[in-house]
Length: 193
Image (tube, rainbow, N blue to C red; front, side, top):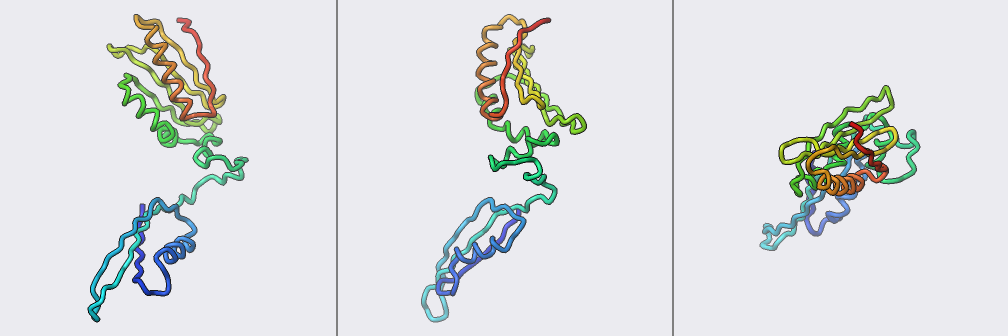
């Protein structure tokens, strides 16, 4: 992340807004994160007050290695889903997408273990995950697996002493995952072990 400081003294030809917009319009490879404004009063030599407004622009430079969305057939939907079309969708990107879901698990004190599976672009497969829901003894009671190619989530309850409880937890977890991955479908399969 980078910063740019711009200042304007009242009475100048350009307001702080004009200076900010002018600077941003001349930058071709940035994404503005935030703009903080501050106004200060100070004395001048003629015993009057001057008003100085400063803007601190927080920005980051855009990556030059991004995939051209038009080559992926992107139709203008939410930009964060662009890379999901490509099998090189990284584990980091998937974890970022799932951040609210992980927060849900932690907030609700759900015991879990998650394995993030790396993409396999040579097979046309992007990042995936296996989520294991654990009982109080850290034994796996339910599993939720993501499948990249079919955009599918598969849920399965394993035979344990608390199958009914895991059924409820799995359904709640499924609903939360589908909020993060709305283009996925869900299928429940029975244990055949």
